[in-house]
Length: 442
Image 1 (cartoon, one colour):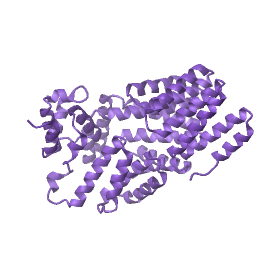
Image 2 (cartoon, rainbow, N blue to C red):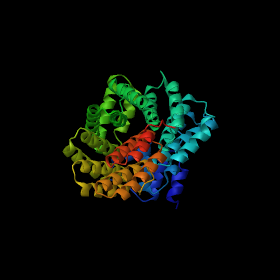
Image 3 (spheres, rainbow, N blue to C red):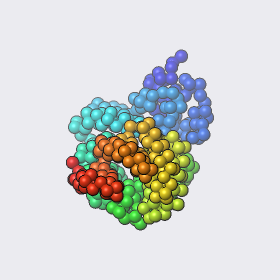
Image 4 (cartoon, helix red, strand yellow):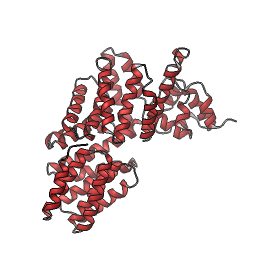
């Protein structure tokens, strides 16, 4: 009898491979669907009526105990129509794109970057070049390489002009993140503002994209010191995020988008969102982003001196992230919570929250999250009277932020540390760190 992996690797279509893997595992469609999907959805996927998202495929592969790459290995989009007419180079490029999407989803950013760079120069199809630039831009950003991300994403804005407004706005949103890495705050703000304008004009209607843009724009307002605008933006993001927390609410929201496209006569887009309404696994990613939005909303409340609401919102963010088993978001919420608790004068609890934030950050490879946690711990230790320990952790936190490539955040951290040193009467070091905060991004 064939093994599960063999079944996944020899069937002709994606649906066939999923069905054969399920049967080889001795599972019924109901058992595979579990509580996350319906039996009708699994049946439609196996019959090729629905093409599942990458996240849904990742979940199915995990349930079937097969590699995601095995399920996708022989699956070339549009094979039924173009099996004899797709040049080999284009076929390889499409496979590289699919594999890069998997690598990005599983946070193998360097692998995705290398894969995409290897095929990019030889690509002739404009649609493939656009897709590669978008994915490559994301990989560069996650690796902290703002300059390269800026180059490919600015190129994508030109390539997509007048022909692909949705991908153009997706590129612009990522470009804003690249500008932030380079310390170009006004350009970052303008990029995310234009994305929201496209959303409000109904050029882009994807609720998940809207949530990401609102999160980015709220952070831009915070960086620019516009606390009221940041609060309004995060509140809008929070309200939208509540509709993206459960599989049913996601399906309802996507169905509304689908009906809107259908009323406008945009049938392919309507069908796409109708298919997406049947998927449930996107809730995991939305829960993670919603937890991050709540952390940012909590800080926005703190910036307006509403510490009670700030603490309650950050506790909610922490609880959400805990349920998602998302160490990065837990650490982010705890680091912010520590700052709010310090503002309330609760030094003991602030120190405990900061220690927990650091412990969570150590479990992940994100140097930016580690740096934030280290700085939160340093400030809590300073408030508790441990100046030596505080200085040690400040230095470590600043070094980690420097490695993350986030020049704008590093500059703010230098300025904040300079202010704390000045309060302690250490004017020489305060001036030194203030100068560092004003150095331009390299």
